[in-house]
Amino acid sequence: MIKIIIHGCNGKMGKVIAKLAAESPDFKVVAGVDKNTSPLDFPVYSDLKEVKEEADVVIDFSYHEAVPDMVKAAAQKKLPVVIATTGLSEEELKVIEEASKEIPIFKSANMSLGVNILINLVKEAAKILQQDFDIEIIEKHHNMKKDAPSGTALMIADAINQVLNDKKEYVYGRHTKTEQRKPNELGIHAVRGGTIVGEHQVIFAGHDEVITISHSAQSREIFGYGALKAAKFIINQNPGLYNMEDLVKKG
Ligand SMILES: NC(=O)C1=CN([C@@H]2O[C@H](COP(=O)(O)OP(=O)(O)OC[C@H]3O[C@@H](n4cnc5c(N)ncnc54)[C@H](O)[C@@H]3O)[C@@H](O)[C@H]2O)C=CC1
Ligand SMILES: O=C(O)C1=N[C@H](C(=O)O)C[C@H](O)C1
Image (cartoon, rainbow, N blue to C red; front, side, top):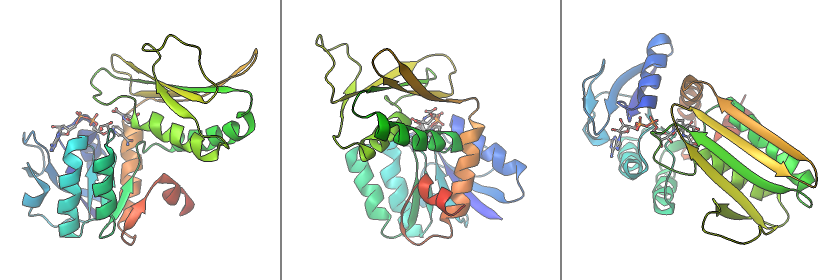
């Protein structure tokens, strides 16, 4: 049985993780951490440093500003971490990288299998279409989401740039520009509304034809299952930074 601490336990995803873990014989939530310390079925602390319970892994779905202190505390406790939180700054990413020298850290802006398949398909399309097609990404999320564009949209854009001969420059929305699109641009656009769980469309627009590769998340559970899979994977790794590709490679 894998003993979990949920960082961000009182949030939407924290509650999904607690529910999925309670339904599985393989996982047990031993504690939670959140700035909102409303009681749950396990002890809730305001800081990972204060947690007394023994655990195997921390699963984090919180807020970008909370991540550096969390990984530092995890490194002190020698606890592997799964980071799902998005909107991380360059500085915050550096703290994660530093901590990964001491503990295994799994980080992905999207824990669903589907988005990770989409990324592979998009990379293949981008290699073939890079000369003649413009690439734009549209993401849509619920009205509670704080960061924009989504971590997934940025992850897709980075994956595209990895395979292109000439790297694209990201353009976020176009309202500040009254000029024609340049060929070296990759547009990234965010839509927010209602309860949309998460949608990502990658548009390859050519002369008189358009190819769209898209993923639509229909529940938060897909991210939850992915995070639990990542937890199972990361507890057996050496210190380092891991992502979905590493998990898929291991089968
Ligand atoms: N990688 C993935 O597959 C997914 C990532 N996410 C990301 O996970 C994060 C959380 O998403 P939701 O659960 O929807 O958000 P939410 O807002 O419902 O929950 C966040 C929780 O973190 C807590 N929190 C905020 N600041 C904190 C701090 N300084 N210390 C401790 N706790 C703090 C909040 O009180 C809240 O309970 C977001 O960054 C979101 O983009 C969400 C879904 C899937
Ligand atoms: O905030 C969310 O809800 C989600 N955030 C992630 C992101 O920013 O990409 C992943 C998912 O789409 C849901």
